[in-house]
Length: 129
Image 1 (spheres, rainbow, N blue to C red):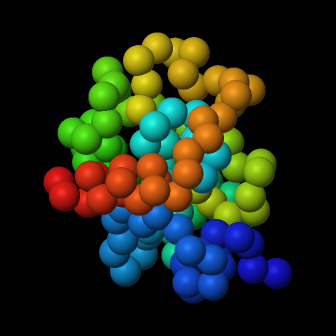
Image 2 (cartoon, rainbow, N blue to C red; image 1 turned 90 degrees about the horizontal axis):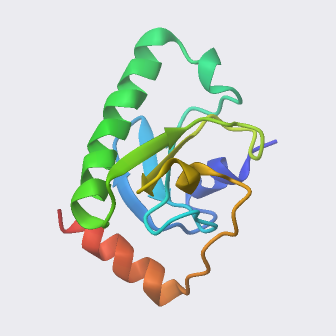
Image 3 (cartoon, one colour; image 1 turned 180 degrees about the horizontal axis):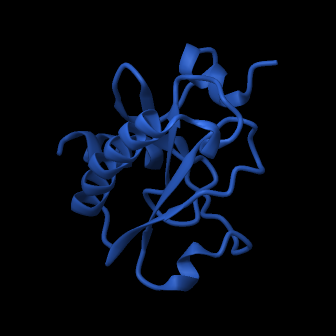
């Protein structure tokens, strides 16, 4: 059964896409911990990140690095944190989260609530880079 991420990749479900190539896509998380919280996913449907072969995982990290720099250049923060949890959606993914302290990576914190205009404006700002 296709995951919600597979439906985003196919265009069945819209997203606020900020980067894409032939293997990966990055889009704003709609339940963000911080402004600019982004998900990086492979277009290949696989459940567990560490089941990806080494070369593919390396390319995913390179893609994530490019996205992280786009975020860092356009969202006020000290760093871009990276998290791999993999329990909430059965599709390999990486969280890139703009952070100012370690507590910003706590997934039990309340999520930000943004409207579609705020998401669109943020996406457009990041895409200008």
